[in-house]
Length: 242
Image 1: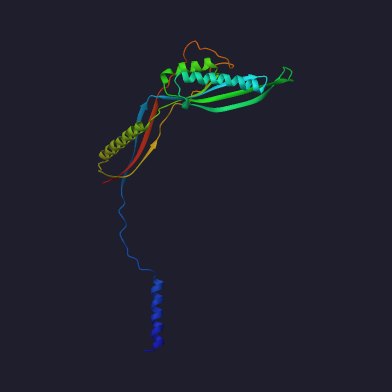
Image 2: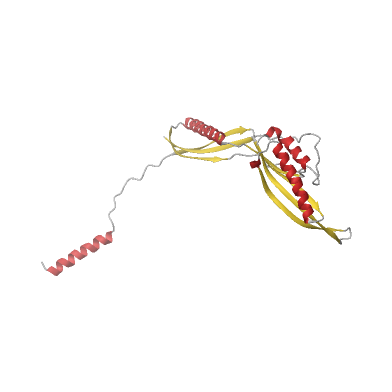
């Protein structure tokens, strides 16, 4: 056989194989897994055991130094009152201090002078809610004239969240079994599980009590109702079905 012809034949055969592409092995497509998806809800109610409050002192004077000195005296009195009421020093934190001039005007709109305003606000963590009303009265009597954004909470919600998750899982299991029984099918293994925290918490209570930077004693203790917190968890579970 002519050698050139043999080489040409080999090359042609190689080109034909290349054109055909890679060799593939057909496999059966995996069986479609039928599933059942359910949502379970678990809720746990808690009574708040901690509160966060902004307590402030506002002062005004003809000069900046007079306003600052007056505010310093009143603020120190308020902080001392809070400590005497049982609030730890670590639970009292300055959140705002500001000073600014304010021009005064006559009824005719003419500038008559300038006064200086000073605000000092502390962020207070209260861990004894039974005495919260008396604590606020003590702060107001000591010179506080601004009480804002009272927010109630639970210091440790770890166990409550665990309990809510467990309830949500049990709720999802019960729903899945009821649906399977009604449809005449059998549940398989859990294919997927997710959970979401839907907890709701009381909104801050806005408002204030007191007046003008002077000490004013309250006739009765400030009424405080912390209400309840609801820990809510949603669990999404997917089962295979037979």
